[in-house]
Length: 450
Image (cartoon, rainbow, N blue to C red; front, side):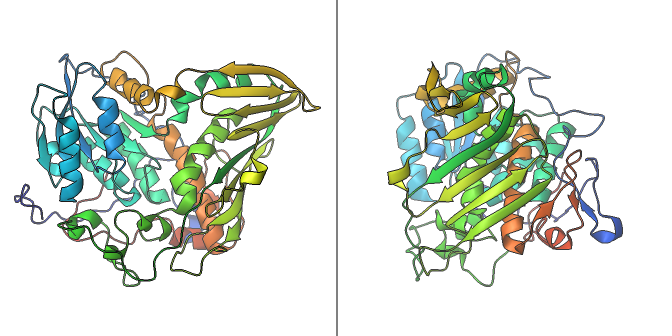
């Protein structure tokens, strides 16, 4: 345990799967599995705008995880009436860089801490910004909500389907605002509004694309950053006898199922969220993933290349992944593309274009929001806490999209087509999916429950 939080040597583990979603549970233990459905508890919807606006003019926040969290700091520094009260990081070098970035930017003092739970003990902290690895997203969010804090959590917000259920349930139970970090919900509002207004008529299909030049996972463990607390880095996650955590900090954990969600949960969640939003759908009928490990003979477990396809009955979509080569010779017409009876609408971060059925460009649109980076999405969360806005990406909506990632990964890992009830999202007759639904246990000393 970190020295700045010595009073918590042991927390009882209490894992409770709550029956808050339609279709929760499995007949005979395997006939049906619950996925994220409605908002929070059936009788207590999760808030999308502040139910209890913070009365003070200045909001005090904490940022946990200073890899991606450095961008959180950058955005928060630009917001009037927001003070960063704590920076939390298990790597002392990253923590020092975070503190240096705040020098001269705010009058209030910021405390550097190793264990973010110290910030949760401070009653004056209004919100926790979670930029920790995926396996931390739900456990940290639950602890924050139980401490009365609002939460901004990076995508995908959950490591597995059970955690997706938990984080939505907690937002309803504790009446906290939880925004997921899928910024396209803010950046692409105008483009999706044009789509929904009929720019290409009834929409039948959507596609999205991801390309990168990722290298191989090294055969030998990387050098562990000096001074990093690996025990706290891993937090509530039990050890994996197949892989040492020292080999995975700070990034390669993405490509191992025990800690990460592969590229689908890393970048695919952004695009699938836009596709689901544009198609105006919640739960699929069928999910299939074709792909594999093609580029490197290394230790990585998750696929580097493939396509995941979702059938919603009246429409469908797919996400095309090429993590180890960007396929630069065949640049798509947009980051996310929709096909309708009246043509095609292609969306990039700052703009969109409309094409008629023959491929002729017939319209364009631009938005100045995406060019401002993370700031508008963070600002939406802050304004919602103040009671002056509704969340652009409330956690119940975010987790419907994260669940598409979880289902796609289950389809890949089981080499099956996953079938779902489109009304409830329950997985149908798939005992292998139940085995992958959540962790069997969490590490002793961590309380992970709703």
